[in-house]
Image (cartoon, rainbow, N blue to C red; front, side, top):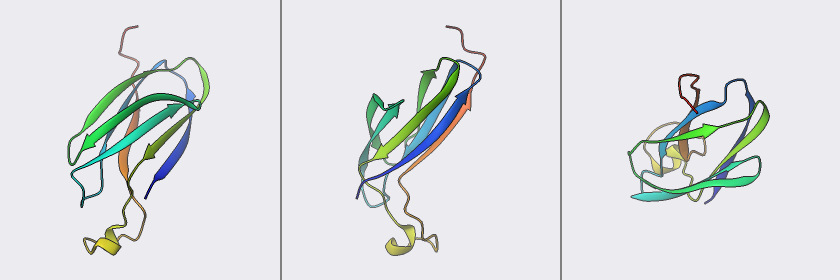
Length: 101
């Protein structure tokens, strides 16, 4: 099952770190695609429980960031927790003004 999340970023600093990990617990790998302003920025095959980091350089202004996963899961349906949400990739977008161009 495929899923996606879209976040809007009001870029104040030009440098960001996108940290992500995930994948369904019943699979050894999954694939994500990251779109920046509707343009494919990267596609990455994720290994279960491994963390990844990508630098993003954004000009000032409003941007859309979409993360698409080829496999989402529901922990409650898998019997691993009471969490009844559809999950896929865990990510964090961090403003990082300390990176040089």
